[in-house]
Figure 1: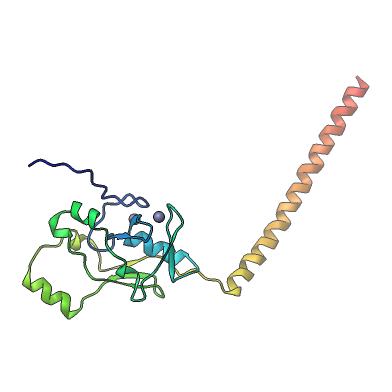
Figure 2: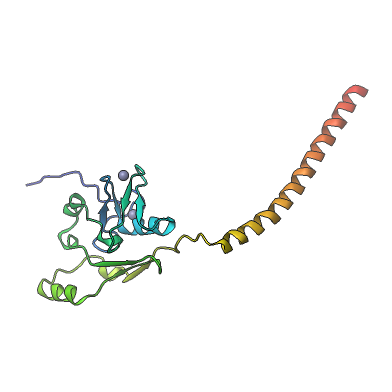
Length: 181
Ligand SMILES: [Zn+2]
Ligand SMILES: [Zn+2]
């Protein structure tokens, strides 16, 4: 009874070991699996909240209407985790707040009382996790960036002109020196 099956329990993005909380192994439509935290971070960075693009094959997976954590868990990865971690906690995701959080519904409390499996890592993980700010597409930010870019460009062009002038001057002087010699 020493069957060792190759278990890939690391998220390919963050190289963290999957767990039953924020790093739950979530499988996309294309069959690639990543941890919930990475998918949430990707969703925060994306302008499209309704779909997640697989970083491996670029296939789009629609985000379930009742939230990102409702994506199905990868059963293969789950079977590789310690038994205590095979029950995925009920996680909520608020894109507006950029936060993953552990849901504490009456349902989960009842379950906990019935079967007291000590959840691993729960004590070391906080009950909510910031995953970044939503991607903004408002004009205000673009304006700010635009202003900065203009002023930056001005300095860039001045420096470029000085460098060009110096190079030309050096060239001319070296040509003169050659012709005189
Ligand atoms: Zn990850
Ligand atoms: Zn994929």
